[in-house]
Every structure is written in C-alpha cells, then in structure tokens.
Image (cartoon, rainbow, N blue to C red; front, top):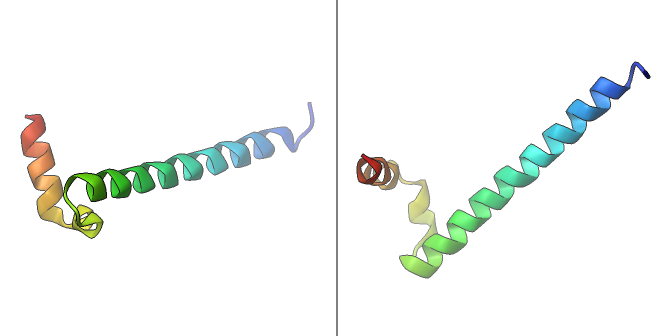
Length: 56
C-alpha cells in the first residue's frame, strides 16, 4: 500500500462531505423560497425552533 493512500481517501471524503453540505444548504434555500418566499428566513433561530418542535 502507498503511504499516501489514507490521506488521499480522507481528502476525497472531505470533498464529498463539502459537496453534500453545499447541496443541502442550496436545496433548503430553494425549497424555502418556493414555499415561504423569503429564503433568508432559513437562517433565523426561530425557524429551527419551530422545525424541531414540529418533529416532537
């Protein structure tokens, strides 16, 4: 095995996690824009409090 192999795998995993995080945020913004009309409201703490209360 190459000594760079674990570093390369870790780097690839980091890149995919960043892509997934960006896709999640963009999806939330687009979905919020289609539903509510103001996508920046997504970043308000009250939105997340309401969301987690809804899940209970």
